[in-house]
Each structure stands twice: as structure tokens, then as C-alpha cells.
Length: 426
Ligand code: HAM
Image (tube, rainbow, N blue to C red; front, side, top):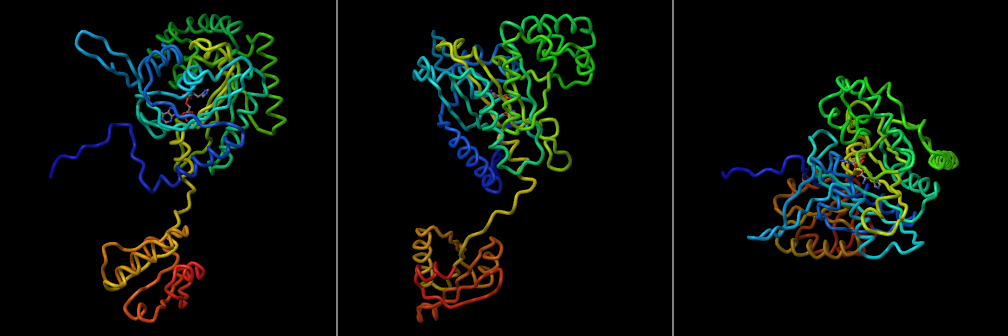
């Protein structure tokens, strides 16, 4: 036998036993977001690397170490263009909105997207190198009510799924006016404990000090417990905005906790940031990769990518993580409505015709395409969980009638060999 070629590490195959669950999640997302007025965009999986360097931030782990990047169109004597598999959807959606002139003065745009993202992260449960996000973005509204409605959309979507307990954590990261003062204070506090930080955070102290607050290592967490948090540094407009977002969430009866240590792993955020975190423990829980949905406001990104100055707010939820949580209580997928068991050549043709006609009426019909005896075909009907079984042999063909058996009750009744009659009897 030839050697097997396996999938790329961290990139998962989704087989039919899980894709049914995935479809339910995707359909809930599409349905919920459509009711909030979001239109779907589909952007390419491959973008110019510069989009993420400028959009997500060169000092982030995502851009610094996790992108799949290659030189496209390189030829002798000519450099190619550096392109990357998208690690997230916000910068690509903004690029498309700018490129297609969707952000004219005064525009209000609501977009959502669904698709694969790529980050070369260390693989573990709930963290993969190809993963899927559903994301939603609002362009053109600076108001706290836009933040509240966006969080409401995420909350409404997540609430439709059976995910167990989720906590919404929110914070404000301030803006260009007040954040620098906080970062200065943070650096000063961290520097006095620099030797106690992990090697990675000693580097982050120089490149991206806010990220030190997000480090999972025990030694860094011990240090960050005592450093100042941003809430004491917000300027008045940022504080007012955050207060208003909170009171609107209260008005929507969406529970949340303020966590002044949320910093997020992408550099474009201003003011509101939030995360929905799974609190489930035990079998099937997500462990350390427990953030299922996250986002925030990014009022400067559009302008920094060459568009008109436009405020924006958005979120993205990780479908892989939602699917893992939903799988814990998933009911077994239903089987076919009808299983036809043909015995003999003429019955095979009749079974195919009946199946084709019934499927056109929206009925799920299955058969054992391998053929075989009555017993083995009945075993198959049982195994696939068929609701009804119809056995077709020479005598049934001759009389134009067959017995339709309901598998759950064992009850059988004669039906005419006619698609309408069979459909009516089920
Ligand atoms: P993010 O926090 O990097 O934000 O990702 C959002 C969600 O995607 C995470 O909470 C997680 O559920 C999922 N996710 C991220 N990385 C992985 C991975 N390696 N494996 C599995 N799931 C993962 C963003 O991407 C922003 N673009 C969100 C946003 C939209 N902000 C504003 N608009």
C-alpha cells in the first residue's frame, strides 16, 4: 500500500457527523445577523500581507509570527507581491469597503462574513491553524448605541445555540488621547518587575506592552495583578462612552462584567472591547481556549487603511469553539424518512423511480445501493435510523401495493405504489 498523506497539522477535516451541527450554527448566525440588518460579504482568503501589517499591527503575535505568507508572482529578475492567508476578517472587510466606495460621507454599513481564517498557532483543543469565524462589522456609527446593538447581535446569536454558561466581559481601551498615558504608566510599573516576566513578555515590554496583561504564564500574571489598570486613565469622552455602553447593555438586560484587563490581540481597537467567555468545565469544555466571540470598536482603522475617517465596531465568533461546545448536548442526527428495500431486478427500477419522485417532494429516501438480501437491507434501514421502510418484491409489483412499516412502532399498512399515496401515508 502507498504511504498515506495526512492533512497539514492544525487543519481539520470536518466530516458529516459534525457538519450538520456546523450548519445549524452557521444558519443561526446568518438568520440572526440578517434580522439585525447585516448584509453578507465574501472576501478572498488571500490578501496582500501589507493589509495585515498595517491593519492588525506589526507588533502583534498574529502578524509577527502566525501568518502563512509567500511571495506571489515572483519571476527571474522581478520581485513578487507578499501575500498572506487571512488571519482574521476585519481588515479584509475594511479593505473591500474602501475599495468598493461603500464608505461615502454619512454612510452606515452593516456587513457580516463567514469563512476560514489561518494562524500558525500552537495547536490545542479549540485552537487550530485553520479555523472558521463568523464576523459582523458596523461602519459609520460612533455612538455607544452602535456598540450596544452589535453586542446585542452577538448575544442574540450565541443565545440561540446550546452552549452552556457564557460570560460577557467588557472594557474600554481608551483612545489616542488617553491610552498613551496609561501605556506609559504600565511600562513604568512593568519595568520595575521586568526580571520576573517571561522572556516573551520582556520582549513585549518593548514592542507591545499592553499584551503583557494577556499573558497566560503564572509568573507574568503574578506581576500584572499589581500593575495599574486602564480604567483610572480614561479621558472624559472615553469614560462617558463606556458608561453609556454599559447603561444600554443594562437596558437590554444583557449581563456583563467589567474586566479592566482585557486588551485583545489585535492593535486596531479603541474604546469598547469585549469577549464572550465559556464558563463550562468538565468533559467537552474548552479549557484555556474559552473565548468564543470577541470584538470591539476600531475608530481609526479605516482611515489608516486609506479610507475616509469612519468609526467602526465589530465582533467575530470562532465557529470551531462554538461547535465543540454545542456538540456536548447534540442530539443524534435524524435518519431518512423512508428506506426502500427492492427485491429483484424489476423492483430495483421501480424503487429508483419512486425514490426520485418522493425526493422531488422533499422526502429523504435512502436505499442500500449494494443490494443484498432482505435481512441485510433491513439491518441497514435500522442502522441509518429510517422512519419508514417499504419492501418491494414481485408480489408487490404485481398487486400495485406494498406494506409501509413505521420502524419506531412496528405498525404496517398497505399503500398504493404511487408517490403521492406513499407521501400521504408517512
Ligand atoms: P480574535 O479575538 O482574534 O478577533 O478572534 C475572534 C474569535 O475567533 C476568538 O474569540 C476565537 O473564538 C476564534 N479564534 C481565534 N483564533 C483561533 C484559532 N487559532 N482557532 C480557533 N478559533 C480561533 C478577531 O479576529 C477580530 N477580527 C474580531 C473583530 C471583528 N473585531 C472587530 N471586528
